[in-house]
Image (tube, rainbow, N blue to C red; front, top):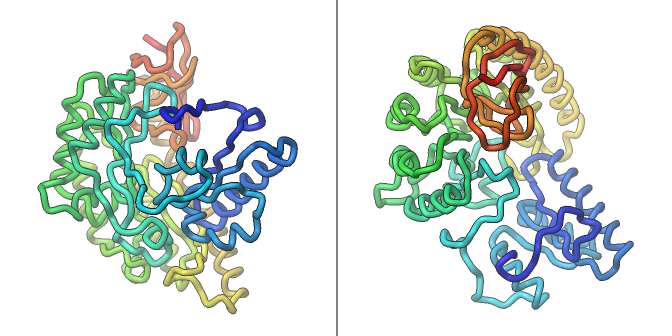
Length: 408
């Protein structure tokens, strides 16, 4: 957009074009996306010349229905047309056969602070978990070639980025769709050689695809954060089969044993409660596992029945859906209370330690064990610090999720 002559505008009310980026993963995300669309259209009513574009997963998932419900939207753009957006805005019509693909040489206009960036290494997913819409929305796994990813990473480093956060629907599946030696461990090795990059962070690692080569990188790479986002979802073998997760409780035990052998490694996970058929005994098994595994960070979701997925109850069984939500929410609350207790204990053990922290904003930073926006923060005391600076500090106190530290 910037190369086509469009300038970013911080205030949607002042913009000539408002682009709403949508998500269709959960019902809550779809509601939020529709609310953002209504807000953009309200701005358009006050300034009729303003153009409203709606882009992303929700368009891919239910574009025709959205177009009927929001006829004032000027342009609907699915996932496969993103790189046509500048031309579409100017022409206001689609032209077959001219779709553009991402170009690794194209500059990135960061929406994050300038010292960290998300680096997409693949798109799509082949896992087909029973509760998930992503494969039907984003299609099969498509791994980017290593040279393309490395070229983008070098360009980001040249712009001052110090932390690269690797993302995909399943980062540990990276390269499985290719037959040219592409693999996550190999990519991590290349990225670790880029001057200027201080931290590499790995999100969305599927337990079934976490190989020993990546575990070796976590143990040995000086730039790879000792942090892993490993969504387990559940531990009951029966529930895991019903979810189509393709691993067992024993597999998880072995995986965590290997990871815990790495000094100072921290693990974030995600769980789902209230999955259809989850018994009280199976929930207790999950709760006890959370207690014993003592994950450093944990996100949880009460099961959300998504139409079009195998796990969704029949549309006529509205009472069953309501019951699933109530049970899932109550069980999730118990997990969260337990995790809060664990988190307080783990963070308390850091008091007195000296840590390296990356500064995100004046007085606020993160350790290598905290991803931006989803994990905890470090409130910095002492000398003035600047965004992007890596500082040493001593931990003074802790709370349920955050630390307070004094800069050395």
